[in-house]
Amino acid sequence: MPTRIRNHKDFWAGLIFLAVGLLAFGLGADYDRGSDGSMGPGYFPAALSVLLALIGVASMLRSLAGPPVRVDGWALRNGCLVLASVVLFAALLRGAGLIVAVLVLTLVSGSAHRRFHAGRYLLLALVMAGFSVLVFVKGLGLPIPAIGPWLGF
Image (cartoon, rainbow, N blue to C red; front, top):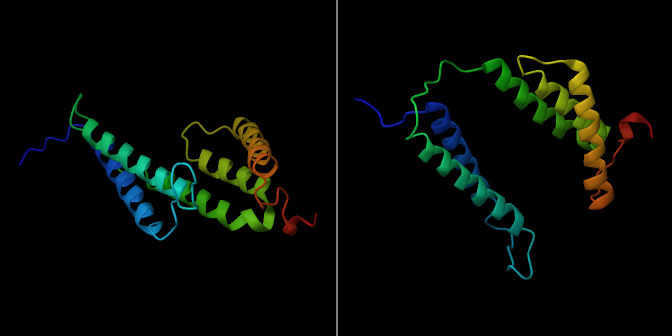
């Protein structure tokens, strides 16, 4: 039976975005959202999850138009590297600090790219780590250590 889906990559990416958005919205349903004038702790996560779900719907709709594109195969190694980078970030954040966690996240996920160049990604990782410290630790005052206790500082 022929399918109307012309771009399978957009379809599957959209389905994943939609599923994650709906899951996040459901998991945060118990948080107090407040109102537009007085936002509660669940307002921002709810807004992001709705946006993610809408991006998923838009991507799925986009998959019905345009030239046909088929998924040739799954990039299992690259997907595992990106997933591992997120898990490492979460594992390192409290103990090693934001700087090390962002460095590892950027370098490990960047190594999934077919034209990975360590020098360029190290420079990107340093810029991202510095930017993250400025925004989240200094600017927003989040209780995240820039350098964690594992490093002896």
